[in-house]
Image 1 (cartoon, helix red, strand yellow):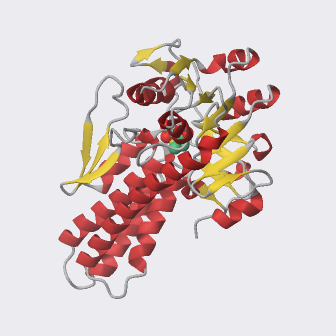
Image 2 (cartoon, helix red, strand yellow):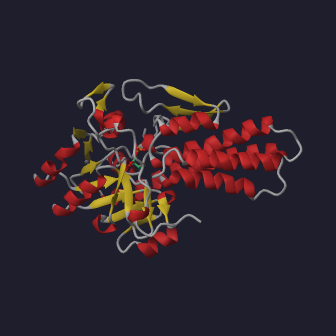
Image 3 (tube, protein in one colour):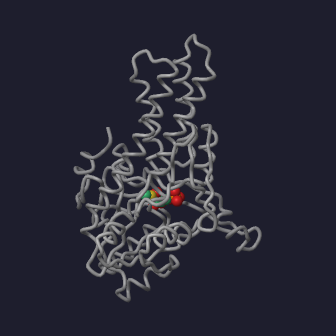
Length: 353
Ligand code: MRU
């Protein structure tokens, strides 16, 4: 069954997360009871992947409302609680700037309570939690819809290359780029996934390989630098990856290394597909150059599994995402269907309100 593990869930008044830093060796559950706990989990990548951090942040807002409703004295309590939620949103949004699902989710929760007519703190706590549940459920439904629409793009031989982890671990479940692959496998169609290891955080080697193996989907793990070799040998039929932000003209931010793959795919005449829910569309930015790119600690590059791999004192850079121009994107798969270039008008219609 495809949703055999949980990534983000609410249990006993806490947000529970599977600690993605520990996979595949250990399946450890992290229990968050405050907005600070969730902010830390997002920053340290205990939870990661654009839709999953959006879901986690929505629950963080619910935790803040719940904790605040207990703290605030009655006079002006609702007003102060909404101010606390506004500050919580700022804190959460700052943790990972590239994935727009994060600020989309916190804005959605905050707007839900701002629209309430004369709420009590208890109302605010209840509605924030309801909205977080809705965001989680909708994300799962969107991933399944992406699978249904995208399966038609999986070529007959089924050799798909993917990068990073855009699977169940990166979403409420089922995944985005992995959704069409899963659906093809469920339909009994041949599929074989070439999994980029995805330096430096190794989301491919640790997480995508773990997910696919659990599902019995055939895979070959390769290093990022091997993609061109396998493309030139004719072993890759298409590339399918997720997205952290798709802007108005169709440019796409995704895990560092995605742009190189798109250039390679173009050079070899291989289709390059993006799979993402509409919560990843940011119509407010005109093109990819305006997307904020997260720079992470260079130690993630100079160290591997807790051991230094570069000489002491070496300067390293770590942009965690890059931008693929829309000209290199063959199609975008969303929960509403598959869209082809030119993207601008179609994306405008899908941009969340
Ligand atoms: O740094 P990460 O692991 O959060 O980056 C994740 C990605 O780049 C994914 O491809 C993207 O978020 C889409 S996940 C469905």
